[in-house]
Length: 69
Image 1 (spheres, one colour):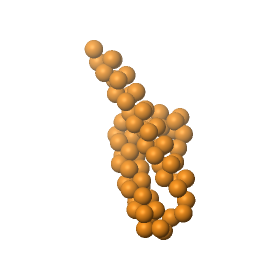
Image 2 (cartoon, rainbow, N blue to C red):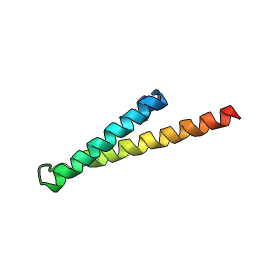
Image 3 (spheres, one colour):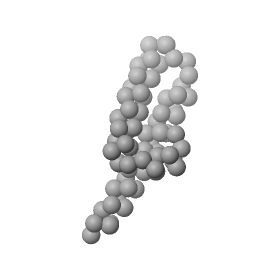
Image 4 (cartoon, rainbow, N blue to C red):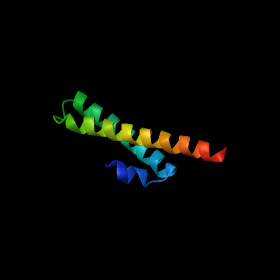
């Protein structure tokens, strides 16, 4: 997921993507612990996506807060 794609989403869409990615990360961690997944790059990529979403969400929220004053 690219930051440009994430920035074009609304806050509701971002919250949905965040929940989806957290669920995906949980499933990937379980698969890794059971020895079903050899590729830890997927976990790293999912964690980065979560960080990007959280960063952009906080930017949008702080921007909206400043505009309302």
